[in-house]
Length: 140
Image 1 (spheres, rainbow, N blue to C red):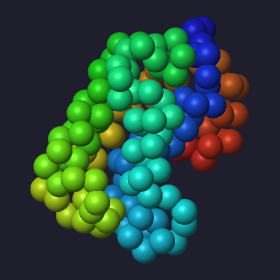
Image 2: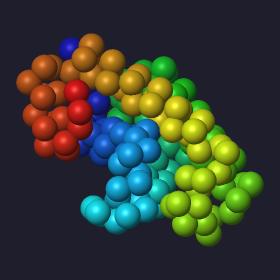
Image 3: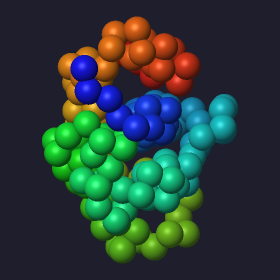
Image 4: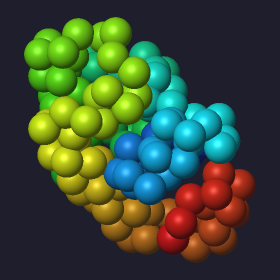
């Protein structure tokens, strides 16, 4: 089995992609504030904490298993960058969610999440995967 150097950071990425891919979650937490989460948290995870903004492929072996994951993450990063380029960085979460680009961002996040979960099934020890997914509340 292959491993990544920082599995907990990987789980944080998965958790944030899950948040970005689920419009119902976004309505509950980002708009209605039923729990703490926000688009800003997702952006900080994907751009700042993980370093994906520079080049996701450089995270292979650290947070990511392969090029497919890195390319899917890059597509999400690029779509968020385009959103910020067009609308700036001052909209509310609801404001970003109302843009015509938002469904494509959700779809990209779903694709990236699915690619990472496929790798986890293929590359992680089942017990490690279960423990990490349970710890971070990630749906299998």
